[in-house]
Amino acid sequence: MGAELFQTPLTPGLIAYCGFDVKFRQESNFATTQNYQLGVKFLNDSSYTVRVALDFRTGIDERGQFIQNRDRWAMIAVYIDI
Image (cartoon, rainbow, N blue to C red; front, side, top):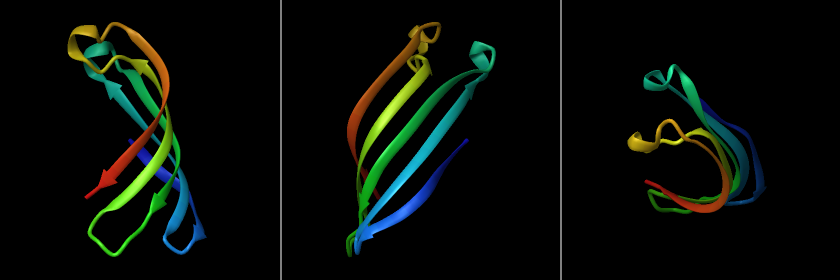
């Protein structure tokens, strides 16, 4: 489950937002993988949107062979939504 919240226009074509995503993993006794994101969207006249965001991820490792491991890390990412 997840949501994108608090979309705030900064300028025409530039929107600040925050969002989250939580995944429950049945194979790990319903442990979670969580992602929290704070960023800006660059809107344009094409069919895609570019986002730049600060992500914070925590929880179990999503790679199958390492699912028993716990991770916690932050990153700056660029997303292209088509």
